Length: 162
Image 1 (spheres, rainbow, N blue to C red):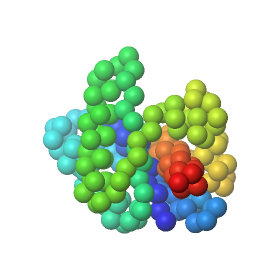
Image 2 (cartoon, rainbow, N blue to C red; image 1 turned 90 degrees about the vertical axis):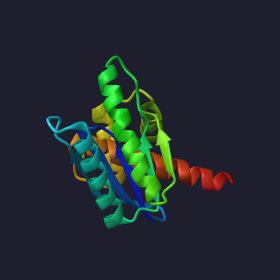
Image 3 (cartoon, rainbow, N blue to C red; image 1 turned 45 degrees about the vertical axis):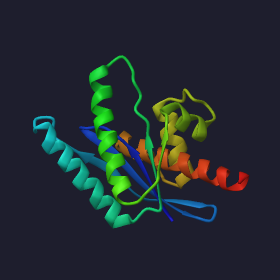
């Protein structure tokens, strides 16, 4: 089964596809969907939705997860991420995918055991868990793979409990 992880952003939305087969987790694809800040906002929404629909159509994931919007000091960034998150949730819902949402600290906790792990530590853990020779790049793609790994871990635990 393919699991899609998304790290939303209006300029850069990271995506990662992991194949879960038994106890094996394999990175299938990772990348970034980009929109140009110079384009009109509506056009950027259309481009992001189109590109995410293409990813969903190509890989046909069975599960999806997205990083929850994190509000920090920069409200403009938070609003931009929230818009991209809404578009991603719409596309995933249109495809019939239930989508789990995880806070950044929940993803960090699931993968490293610490909710305050730094970017480099997260990238090393993602590379190690997926058997990659080096950390995935760009960082948005690595973050999306981390979200997918977090969801695999949470859903596996939930299946054992129920």
